[in-house]
Image (tube, rainbow, N blue to C red; front, side):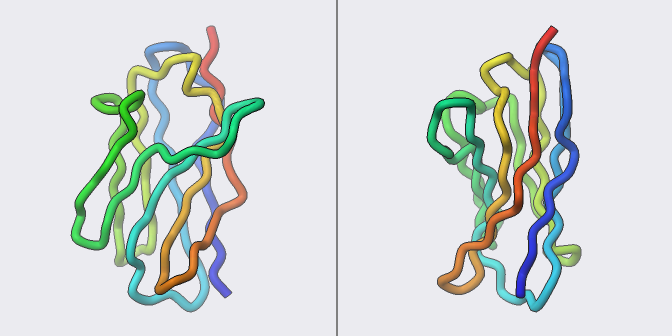
Length: 115
């Protein structure tokens, strides 16, 4: 059984920074992609950034140049460095691992950007 646990969310001021972490536990091998999604109030969950097992990264346009995704396979962790935060970044952030053909999700961490 694989479990993912996010941490690092909280309240930040516009222009501020937060770093999200996601740790995996359980029987884990050969993680393909790791990703971050977010769900804003009243909206569907949407992709934020993804990183492949080769280190290739992809970002959605609203976060390009501000967010950085990284992974540490030895620790089975994925990170999301969020800089220059905006109020529209307010959402619950979820990490996602693809292992084989199975997707695993964390429980989410709240990020609120407000002055």
